[in-house]
Image 1: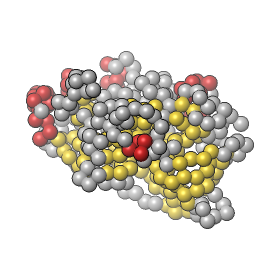
Image 2: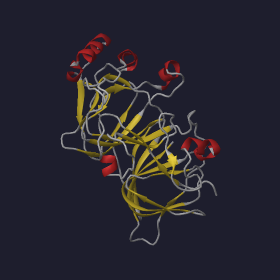
Image 3: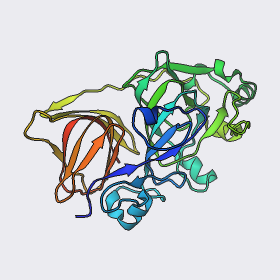
Image 4: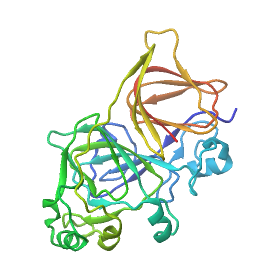
Length: 328
């Protein structure tokens, strides 16, 4: 059978705010410094992941899905292939204050691209780590332009303390930023559209300030005060060998946290994907083995990402691990 799971090899990004934790914590063997992001599951032209095991080993994920569109299932796909992008983010320093457009704006003004809805799962957070989530008071476009240009925007931003295991859904139009000391798993639409409002007057390795996109940001930003985001109601459901909880469900993706512990069981956690959607398993802790009926076993470790095609063979997992389980 061709519809077997396979490990993905990520693409790395060296944005100036990154650190070393993706190498140190997740053993990502990508020689870039700083190491800000690893695009774990991506067919976006700005950075594709690659099949690292199985019959497609060495091929870009986009090419695999062009050859086997049935792997995506009947869920509508993005023009680049998979409709989502999954990444790890190591924020050693603050990310820029930014905003993303919605699909309608991106289609009209960004050559038919997708907008960006994203979800953050906090893998770790240093004491005092925060994120920016909207404004604590209403602003006008003129006020936002002025404070973005003169640097006083920081006094209007709503800062939110973050902790390990927190979840945040960031919708288009929400002005936001990940703060220093956060290690994040991000699930988002397959988009790389970011409009920077403010970047702390930093310079890159060539001594140049990064481009701002204030005019575009003003067209899409929500200028109303934003209520502090609340953590969603989460209920762990226990069954022999595993537990699961829903973290987020929106029109673009569904994310669950899956806790596997089959070390003392004769029976193992097993499942198969439906014909309407692929599945991606992102291992955020632990290790183990994935078996697929009629295929080879795959050893996985913390930081590994596994792509499982739609209508897969029966998949069995053995070990002690935590996953983010993502499907559309």
